[in-house]
Length: 271
Image 1 (tube, rainbow, N blue to C red):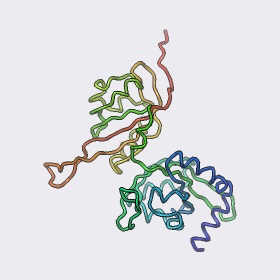
Image 2 (cartoon, helix red, strand yellow):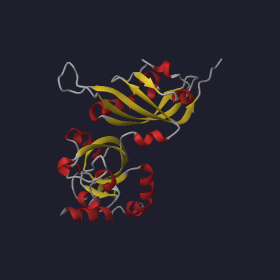
Image 3 (tube, one colour):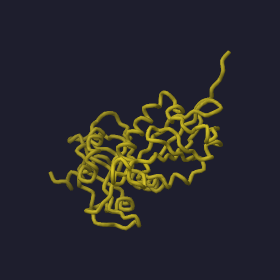
C-alpha cells in the first residue's frame, strides 16, 4: 500500500481527531506551535498548515515522509521509544531540520539548521480491521524569547552543574529569595525530592540538545512551602574559543526562564 493510501486509511479511523482539528487551530495559535500526527513507523500522517511558519516547509512537502528523515540522528532512539505503545502520555524534546533563516524566510533544505521542539501528546489506538495506531503531538519550538512576556517569570543563569551564577530581582516577589542568597546554590537544593527526576531529564536534554523545557516541578519558597514552576532553558555558548582547545567554543552558562504557576502546599508546624 502506498503512503497516500496509508494516510487516508489512518485518518479515516480517527474521525473524532479530524473533527477536532479546527478547534486545535485555536489552541495552536495560543501555544505558538503546530500539530503533528505520526504513525508507529514514524510516518508524518498529518501536520497542521501552520507548520510552515516554524519549519519553512509546507504541510504538503512533509506529509507522507518519515520523521527520521528530518530529525537529528542522535534523537532517533528517543523518538523510537516514544513511538512504541508504552502508556498514553508523551513529553520529549527533539531536534528537527528547519529551512527558515534568521529573518524568517524559507531557504534550501540543504542549508537547513536544527530547531529544537518540545513535543507533548498521547498515543492513540484506533479500533479498526487494521488496528491503526498513531501518535498525536503538539510541537512547540524553543527558545526562550516569548517566555519573557509574563510577569510571573524570573530569569537566572547557572553553571553547567546547575548552580546559580545570577538571578534577576523578580525572584524576590515570586519566591522570597534575594538574588544574592541563591548565588552558588544548586537548583536541586530548591527542588522537591519527588521532582528530582524531572530536573534530571531537563538537565540531560540541555547537555545533549542545548535547549529544553522541564515540565512542572515544585520549588521551595523561602517562607516555607512550595510553588509549581516550569523552566525553559538553553545553553549559552562562549563567544571566545577555549584557551585549552584552540578553536573550540566551550559552554559559558545555562540560561533559564522559570514560570511560577501556582502554590501547592504550605509548611505547617504540628505540636
